[in-house]
Image (cartoon, rainbow, N blue to C red; front, side, top):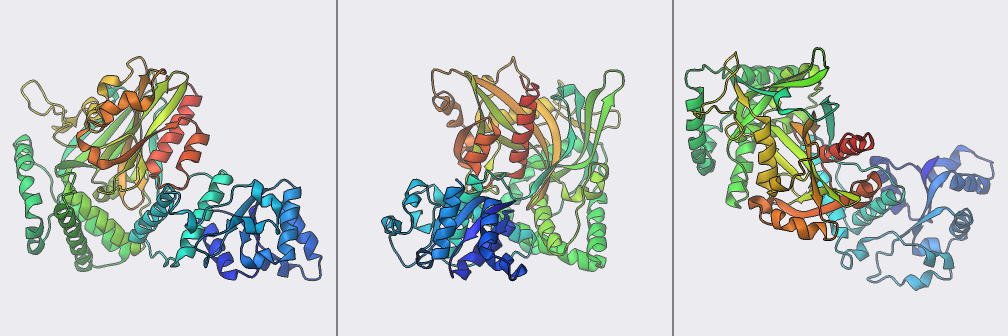
Length: 539
């Protein structure tokens, strides 16, 4: 069974553009130029009918040539007789305005269906531009880690994108984000705060810009002094290992790329320079959103408490910062293009610690609105790294100083090995407050919190903690009217372009987000929350 039967006449350039795009996006096709030659002497009319029957939908490439083709007309009428889903793609590039009434002599039935959109609708349907924007963003990110082929120029490329997205929606194809999210440890329930242990080891990994380029981001480096001084006070009296993770990174490059240490350090210097260029650009246009102490992930150790099978999670962390995070991202791009392998699993996290110098916490707000339920999705603005992506309701980077567990005297709480500890409750509350100001709206009679940890692999590597919180709203008023006062007052509203409340069902999520650029971690979390909802574990 194929997804699409393609009916056309003579327009091989359009056909090949469709075939190339369909193959990339997982849409299977049947088309005569690829199949009829395989069965010489057989009745090709019956072969075509059989494959129309065996396809989920019928795609008519509607051009001035196909209008004149009796074969195309016969194929279309046969598909109509089978009550097949008909997808009509009009392509008349020389017409500034297509007269859709001219097709009546070809097939009156085409009046009964909604045609696929093409580039001529862009000016009349503004929402279509987001599909093109998402596709371009996808290609931009892919080009960072792979030698992505050049895209065809001109209106045809736009037409193919719009038509393919319409086809994906009609076929109810699954959403396809850029990259992937791999769960590393899933709990059967929300972790209690005392069952998550964030251990800040006495290890650090800092990469600094070269002396030749440091002056270009002097204001950024100067602003780091305050938190560096505070962190130095916390580290005073506790020796910190500073070279291990750096040398581990150098060894990884040498092994994966078959390079000498000197050659590896040249790649490192290139990544340092690229990181400076990115920060320098952000400083010039005033879009730098973060400059503070971060934590990298050194190891993850899940376990079960004997007797009651309660899940616990130990996450070993090291000290790092934002420049190092940007540096490792650029290094990752360079190494991926050299075909370096990052086969990361729960059992070998420490082997890849140099590339995991950020820990994030993200999650969805679930809105209970009477008998209806919604997920709060956020489209990120074009001012931040995750620009134009549809993402979680909230997403925070773990901050080494803000999330520390302190004693009554304001000193870091340390474990038996003198490791500082982060507080999961502080982190979770800060994520809700700093982005959405919704902490006082969270329903206390429902579960909430962190329940999963996993690996993001896209244009970067990052460990992410999954969480959620539930809000109950008054069904007599709209959700937007009730929550706008919180979401509009957030300091960092600059990071968001839009907030949508999408019904909490798989069908609605696919329908509302098809064609838009979705982060793999947000899509995975939505699926996992749907599963928990079905298993009655959320409420």
